[in-house]
Image 1 (cartoon, rainbow, N blue to C red):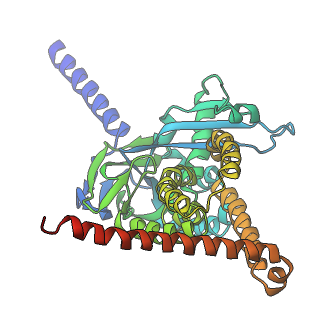
Image 2: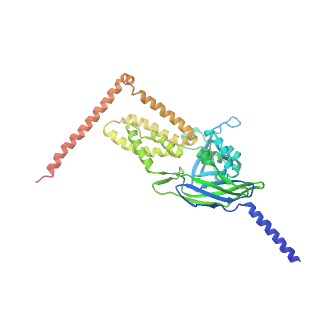
Image 3: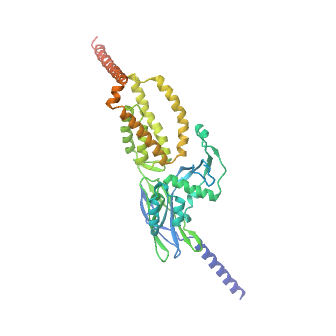
Length: 413
């Protein structure tokens, strides 16, 4: 009798433990495809408790460096000037929610760049699925102008607590991906019995490697998650993954673009960076910090060949060039750090206005009235043209004199 009671108690305990284990996690997800070639769409299926709200958190194994600079006045009327930076943000990150939330996402998309990611997560309930970025370490720096001039981000501040780290992670994610469609997608079809399906899209040009998918169900008793499901995204030449930019692109397109830009840039006495910069930001999903840094060594090649050819025809004033070069050397220490302290919209605004002013100035200098007024400039241009013609004639004469000498040396003795 005692043995029978004991066996029933053990059975009851086992059922309770098994039921609790089932309540703590969802069933494994089913993916119709586990491998993609330069992005694509897969269908994810799963089972959740009936009447629960289901979300999917999707992220890439590849990570990038991302930051958020807080220069807005707080409740005390103070501007923090703090830089929040993580080196482990997923290169691709998106949360999927029910199709019923599409109208909410449309409302946020109409707000443009002023939409708030944290509020969008709260309004859709997707904040329950926001987990991976919040778990990545975030460094906080107290930024100052003097620190930027010295090539520093500023003083490193104490580690954030979990609540503040989660809030700052949302700001970093929004600063990195910017648009609603890149971060939130309403494709989950939920059924009364708790089963669900969703279309998950990995965009073309996304990072290669492993991607993880986790389902999150919000029930009356709390939040339960599924085991992590994975898929692989593959790329092949001529696609190349830019690890610090978190994106892949076809190498031939930027090669041809740089060729055309360098021809025009050297013609204007520049390396072409002022043209490449806005084009790269507009044509590809590249962070403005990466674009600014990439253009610097790119321009070096065109400037090197341009300096050589301009020096041969005596078109370089070395005194003026070295003087301005020293100032640009100093500016080169300040600029890279300042790029982390501005947003892409601010970058485009400032850079765009600089180009407009320069274009207007150059256009004004080509008008007949300006040229008539500046005859000295016309004389300088004529002198440059005369020197170029003399240099070309001297090279032709030297080549002509060398040809008979070579023929006489090669004749019979």
